[in-house]
Image 1 (cartoon, helix red, strand yellow):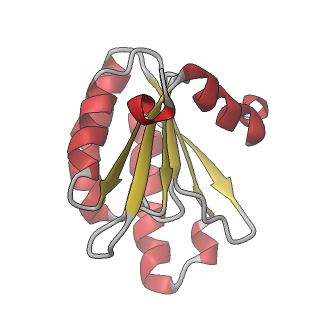
Image 2: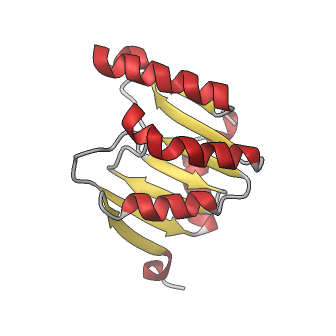
Length: 149
């Protein structure tokens, strides 16, 4: 299989439909790195995350420490992080200008690019979806995620 068969490009208009489809097929684990979290974007994800958690899928969110945001974003982020924790999502706060945007689903699908998964609203972005266990695990190991999960 060549790389074009396992990789697709998406923009802000096509990303969410494909990403939600992938989420709905998750069996074990969702890992999302998104520096920003907004209430508006969480309106899409909240019911999906609740369904996944009910099915026993573990969800991990790596995000920027709200103290590193400007005041308006800080309050919104803190509120959504609290909502996550009440739902059963494990939130890991990153310090030092965390800016990575990616997701690893069941350690076999990797999404990476410029789009803030948990906050994107108006910006033009690009994301690449790669369905390949070896590549997903390469990212997992490169980021040393095993020490956090």
